[in-house]
Image (tube, rainbow, N blue to C red):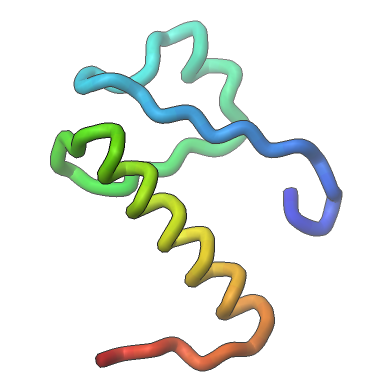
Length: 65
């Protein structure tokens, strides 16, 4: 999707996930955690994951504190 330049839509499901109609339309599905997270925390975790992936694609070293 990154190289194709296709639009990306990220959805956050409720405690039971996305409905079957919505989930069936997805090209890719990610699970951020086996835990049920509050929506505010999901936004932070997702933003960090996307930032880290972009950093790695740009050749920045993987930081391990």
